[in-house]
Amino acid sequence: MIIMYNEFAYLYDKLINDVDYKSWVDYYFKIFQRYGLKPKLGLDLGCGTGNMTVELAKRGIEMTGVDLSEDMLMVAREKSEGLDILYLNQDMAEFELYGTVDFVISSLDCINYVTDKRELLRVFKLVNNYLDPGGLFIFDINTSYKLENVIGNNTFVIEDDNVFFTWQNEYDKKKKICDFYLTFFCKEGNGYTRFDEQHSERAYEIDEIKTLIESSGMKLLKVYNSLSFDNPKKNSERVFFVAQEQGKR
Image (cartoon, rainbow, N blue to C red):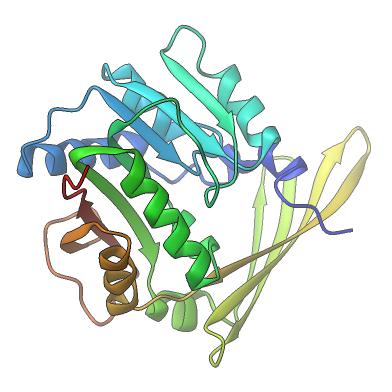
């Protein structure tokens, strides 16, 4: 049985506990400062269990989080008590907000999960529509180098407390799609419960993303190597894009 972000939602935080969310949000604020943005309202697109959303809200920003998985959002709501966060169970390619925001982020390679270029263009157009004039869109992707050479066609075995799982990957160079096959064994009492997940990410080149951003009406300001202000390298594994709404309304 293949399950998408159901049981997985409750394991997600444990499995990505190496992500320093405070450092990521520090980086976002450096970008805000670099481009003269003093944000009050923000959107976390593909917010998952809300770790980035919560950290931004703790710093005084009124946040909205959008995610397709209601299970992920249930986890997010549990950790957001007392914070000014609105969570919406919506598809990234069809989301609707109650108004515009100063910035949109989409973190931890959410964009790679949009494997159809036409659908990604719809995402970008919606972002452009809901950004205030001059607002920023900040997102990161796993690079094609990483998906093909680091993750692709490799198998990882991970054991963490009461969870054991295997992560098998297949990279299709022609389609530029990396399929992830995950099998989990979670300890329950004296036995283990198994469940399986399948995910796919598309390898996008920087020029492809640039074209889609410009086609959406936004301007690409810069592409940076992961959590820095350096230019990307040939072997960069994660890059960040900063795009801006051009005030056409």
